[in-house]
Image 1: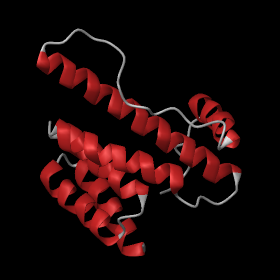
Image 2: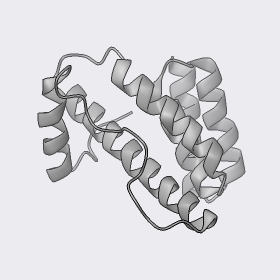
Image 3: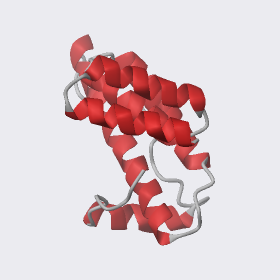
Length: 143
């Protein structure tokens, strides 16, 4: 897992420098090393969006969403905030992809056909964490 985290950190550094293709290589390496880790898939999806590879981005972000919901997050407030923040970021990205794909296809805007809601019935603590994450900065939470 530490190797995958190192690749995600390197991808973030490359993104800061605008080196998107190299950042994608790093994010893909993270996914290959830890295919069950949602953060690698989320970063890969975001980079693919910037590269305008929307279908691939949607697939990566959908995988990130699925893994984020099933990842064994520690039962702490910080972990709940991080999970809620990650879910919100994935949801926002998928929404932008849906709008972009509809626009490209010439379709009128409508509801994004991606189920991204936090399943409050199965994970009630996430609803509260999502609300908290929306109102507070998560800048201090590390990967």
